[in-house]
Length: 266
Image (cartoon, rainbow, N blue to C red):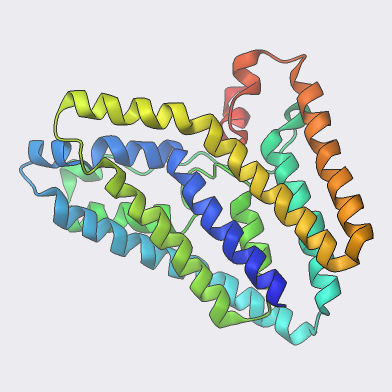
């Protein structure tokens, strides 16, 4: 299961980074910043630390669920070949979901954190609370099917402790994203940071899709050798072509939406 482990780790880290561009992730770069915390009469540093701690705890919560699933898979005694076959199909399906061909994608939800907490609670409560919700991956906006893929791959390892570690890593990466806003001390810097993130939004989406397609091809190759490489590569190319053609008959703005946002734009 070594290959499956590697695929799970790569997917989890990529999905965590991709989550920075979710509405909740970007909201944290507006509401939990040095500028915003100073306006509330608080210091940003301690709040950021609480946010990261909460995110790690959220990741461990997700990891605990994945560990339970991995324990079940471990008792089933799946062969490496079977696990790779499932991983391959799932990775390609999740990549297709993010490409949103013909408006088809896996179910997502659009829950935001409750920003009223900022005025109602102490910094450690909203810092840790927001961090936990974002770190667990499923409590707020799900921007990519890569989150689902991470859960499945972690379960397919059949190793509960590894699955728990993947969850913790996922939460840590999501939490550390708060430090991207450490320079936001003035309104001008706030605008500058969001412009930079806005410019990276599409590349981040495409990079996540690329990771999942690569996971599918690597899984297929490990599963069936050269035949798997050819079939997996053709399947990945086919998915991209079909999605591209499907978007030609859709408005440009809609075609450029993330799969998570697309379900709410219609």
